[in-house]
Amino acid sequence: MISVKKAAAAVVVCAGVVMGSSCSGGASSGADMKTKRVEYVAHRGASYTAPENTLAAVELAWKAGADAVEVDVYLSADGRVMVIHDATTRRTTGVDRKVEATDSATLRTLDAGKYKGAKYAGQKIPFLEEVIATIPEGRRLYVELKSDQRLVPVLENMLEGNVHRKQIVFICFKLDTIAACKERMADIPAYWLAGGDKDKITQAYIPIDPAIIQTAREKKLDGLDLHSAGVTAELAGAIRAAGLGLAAWTIDDPAEAKRLIGLGVGSITTNRPDWVKQETEKLLETN
Image 1 (cartoon, rainbow, N blue to C red):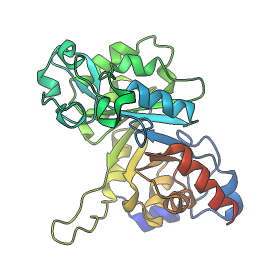
Image 2 (image 1 turned 180 degrees about the horizontal axis):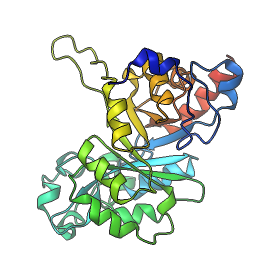
Image 3 (image 1 turned 120 degrees about the vertical axis):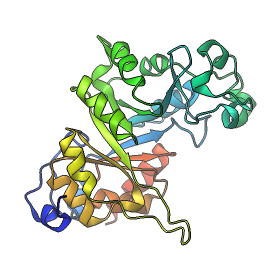
Image 4 (image 1 turned 135 degrees about the vertical axis):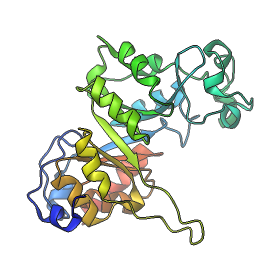
């Protein structure tokens, strides 16, 4: 296990995969924060306004100027990559079907938009390739793998020769799955998701075990994508000192976004990318 204190004190290697700019070992100064390149990622598309994980939400996020969009994917019963967060369709369509046990044609008959209002009625559960096709030049798509390793070869085939391949980032909570992505598609950034668990009695967030740093390095992953509550100055410094990228989710509070930027987080996932970016930049200007 890496000692967090020792790693944080070591020479910092920039997390260039996400940020593409210089960085330092500790919290940034006000001047550094104003010039630092931070990527604002639209969580499930512009999900604050539009129905999550639909083409409407994705296109609205691009229109609003999001640097990147995050979507979730499951494998359908007939091997298609479906863009949906839950294991079942009940919450977003009103019809209860298990995604992995249902063929894609049936899944596509469900209305995934009307729960957000009549204007979005008729939105289908997208195929991942439909979302990939929307990525504008200079933006990125974060793909969270919700199914197991069976997804990996399907994604590999889908992205073979795809013009948007260099704009894809894989994220996943399952270590074996994200490691398989990196092993089979070494050129595509792969981040291990972690954090967000709460103590059942106190409901306080459980600290993130710094041992994940060494594990991520051993698996040759590009970085860690952590719940914002678990990103401390000490942990952030250790991650960056280990040469890993650092992303955080899901932040809708500009003050929290400012704190994370000060710790060197290079990517912030939010439900309100345009508003959070605008308000956070205001805070940085007044720093």
